[in-house]
Image (tube, rainbow, N blue to C red; front, side, top):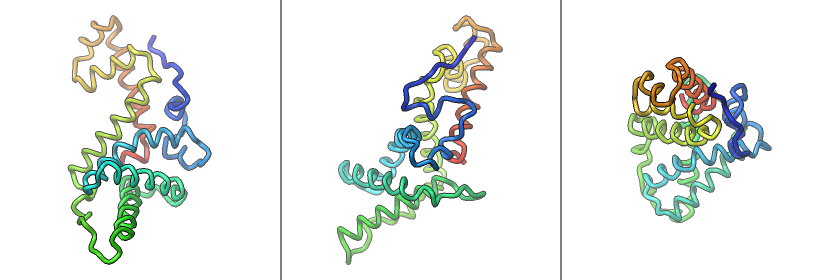
Length: 197
């Protein structure tokens, strides 16, 4: 049987299939594991946004750190609402922090970039956001599943291989392959509820 295994403390936010989603865990300021997981997932996304605004490595690192601190302070203000997306809220926090930095450096000068061109709701940004979000979440979740369970899902979903072929390779039933795929995708959907619109 394909069973889950316990993960390291950093990943405890993604362990129990009945646990609240990450976004609900973030509402508890003392939940260090949730915030560590959030940082692990969102660091590459925020760096990608910073580089698109033309920041160098040091400027991007400073902005990402400032955005994480502000997000922790303001997360209680975030409310999930129909038609309003988490990434839009995070983008607003990010851009406002970037503008604040620009004004400090050049109080009388124009902003250097038209951030409307970098709106994360356009199709390119949407695809990039989802790719980063899912990729990071999957890497974190991988430690919570037996290797055969993970490989069965990965081969079917990512490598687009037929379940019968994967089952034969792993020495399990086709039903076990479908079960593994269903379990992992259900878990991914649950954990990203509110983050993946």
